Figure 1 (spheres, rainbow, N blue to C red):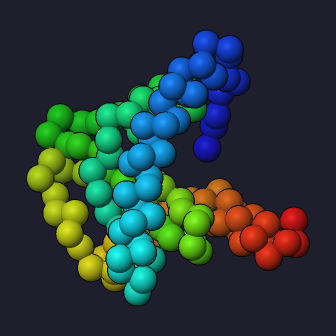
Figure 2: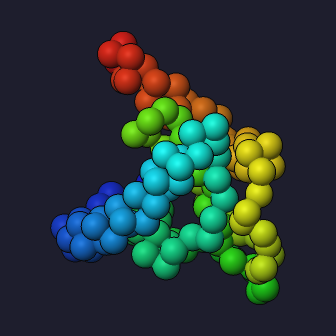
Length: 128
């Protein structure tokens, strides 16, 4: 994953987006609280998440015609979630089983994804 240097203007824009993104990701938190047996979910990406991602990456996600951006969320542990973005055909179902959502996450995850998750777990265990 390549990230770009955040200029002062980008940092200001990120700060403006942060509260809006937080409200969206709190929906993920509530999902996992309501369904404690789940570790994964799939949903449509919000416009504000896409704006934030573009600021972080420096370019928008390439979306072919007839596709939308979806987010697959992994509940690493209570209070810590990872989001991966992926294009998929418009109209795809988001109400999928845990098995399907996990398979999507694992298909999209990169070696860097697994490193970040391992770091999150080490930090949570106090072994950073």
